[in-house]
Length: 205
Image (cartoon, rainbow, N blue to C red; front, top):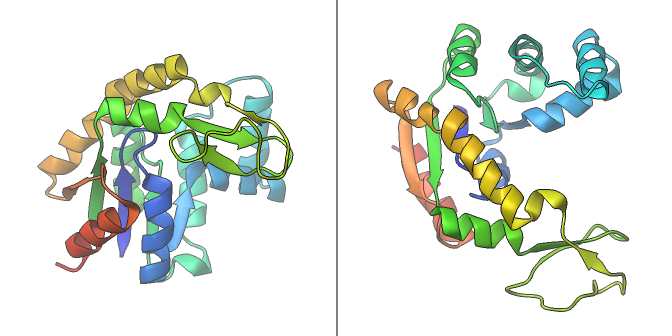
């Protein structure tokens, strides 16, 4: 089974991807994690990406696609894979078609204001790395005693900017995959278990 999870920042793609990948015994592929792994392993593509990142430049599509091609040939992808955070653009989606067929594209739909509340409410501990949300944990300090902080990426203004970028570059993928008959939209504004059940219902068809 070969899947793509689409959805804006904070929609819960990563959380759901872990559950689905475990259920169907397929590889969960995050392009961010993949990029870091290639750089750690010192591959040709990883070194090329590192030199770009070190200069503050974006990693171009051909490098990302080269990594994707390498990644899906690994042993843990023999039963399939789930892309989390890829493709991000129509150009990447078209290039992916040349590399592999896709069975399902799951779009997690969550209202923008709910996303802003979800992300801007996150707090992190610099000492132990624990994460909290102000809706369920109101203390200024972590349970380990260290002070909690809000990541720059999680501040409301930054979140709103990220959503604008998503609308402009990634949301057109919804129309693209709808035309191909691959898109299935799931309400992501529910509990983790309810969303998980809705995704499994789609995949069991």
